[in-house]
Image (cartoon, rainbow, N blue to C red; front, side, top):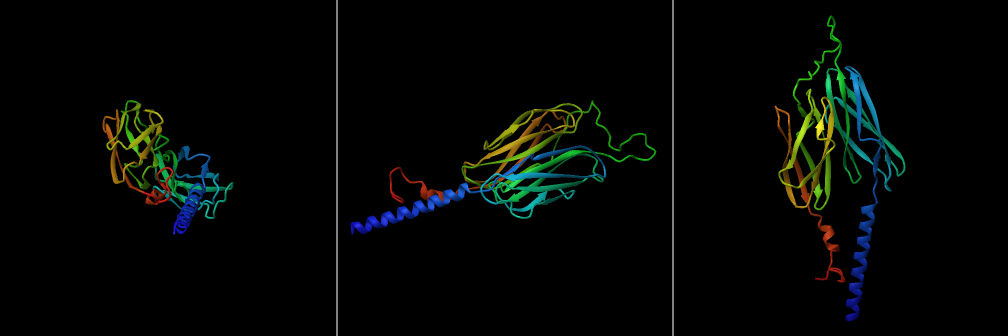
Length: 272
């Protein structure tokens, strides 16, 4: 009887070990998208120009990468991408085409790359400034009114909400936001605050020069299982909008399959 019990325990232990190492192998087996750049600045372009840029990446992981879809933040941007699987060590491309016709002024657009890597919703950005078309019998060479130097700072953002989607408890999820100063004086970011305290941040520069852009990176610390709705507040010296709010969403869940491997030290599998 004792021998049978020992054999059963040994078999259960061996099976659990096999499953554990199989899961560990799958965890570390993945493709990695390594881009030359994740933000591209076209600079100043003339209205009517079809601005095109190719984002090139290398698969530095150990599994093939498959891109299922690339979504643009607006209809003025048309993306195309490598349709076949990108093998380890090989390169892939994502091409963004921006139609500037009828869109004078600053632009900032994002591309969401849906793929099978650890970053299933990777973000790329294109930005620039469109110089308006010349108007006949108008000595002013552009129909874009220049911002006077006396104009106060003015904060602009591409979006005021973001959904992190499903995030496993204990993990971290990041997203980058572009902050643009459309005013004629320096925009000074005076405070950044998360209502729930579960979002940390990094800002490339707290002082944003006129007609310039800086990057705000928010990191969700998914420590508590919940349906999260947080308000992240940006305070600045913009007299019209001294506080800008970003609404953040996330569905934080617990991966119960990992719990079966968290046994007491020195205990047999499933021993209480």
